[in-house]
Image (cartoon, rainbow, N blue to C red; front, side, top):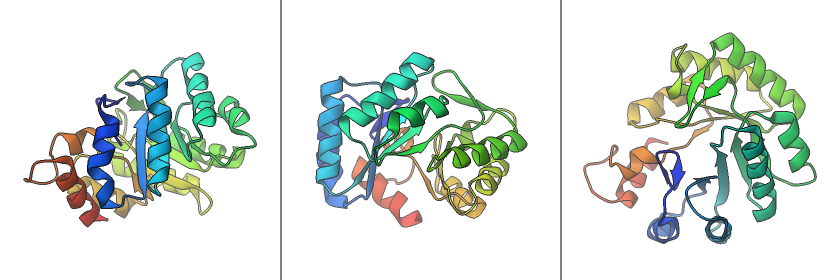
Length: 216
């Protein structure tokens, strides 16, 4: 994710150029932080590199969430992450190839924290898949009422074999990446921790991403 503190970084286009040689298959950004024209250009350049684009919603109001869903359709992202207006978002995405991964649980605030226990996460995830979502975007390490691995396992059960489980937020160490894989996650997002240099002693984002890739 070309993001820090839950916002797309202002120099996202330059950063994308820096990491392009790594051949990443997935690159994401948030719905806040840069102007719409930059978002559109960023998405086009991500897809031109042969990567899938991921737009994550961090807006907290219903109006803003749905605005972000419409933005996803307008600019043509591959995947839309986050938000809680599931039925309304699916209506907006209908007829497109965009995969939708809403937040299960009770996300609150910005930066977002996650309320809800394992039973709620599993039940909501199961319901979202039944509604036609491609999977869920679980803020496992932002949980306030349960242990992250328990929530990942619950979401995995809810996804079954049909849904994809992506974990987001505070994935800031190799140990957490390994724990997510062991608990059943299909993927994860990482942004701030990579920019902060949490994964490798070498400086620079490319070095951090190489170290992250070595974990997967």
